[in-house]
Figure 1 (cartoon, rainbow, N blue to C red):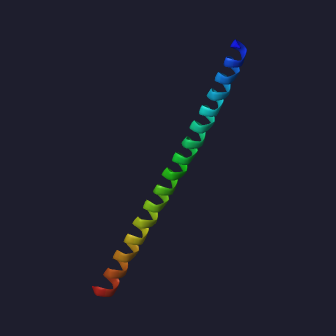
Figure 2 (figure 1 turned 135 degrees about the vertical axis):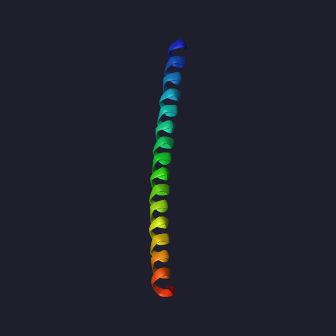
Figure 3 (figure 1 turned 30 degrees about the vertical axis):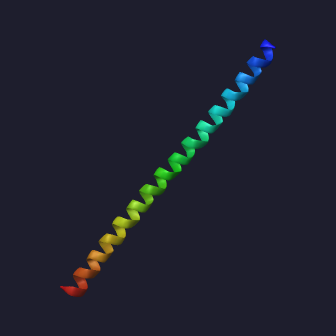
Length: 57
C-alpha cells in the first residue's frame, strides 16, 4: 500500500510539474505577443503622426 501511495504521489507531482511548464509557456507566449502588439502600435502611431505632419502642416 505504501508503495502505491508513493507511486500516486510521484504521478501527481509529475502532473503538477507538467501543468506548471504549460502555464509558464503560455505566459511567455502572452508576454511575447504583448510586446509585439506594443511595437506595432508604436509604429502605427509614428506613421499616423508622420502622415498628419505631411498632410496638415
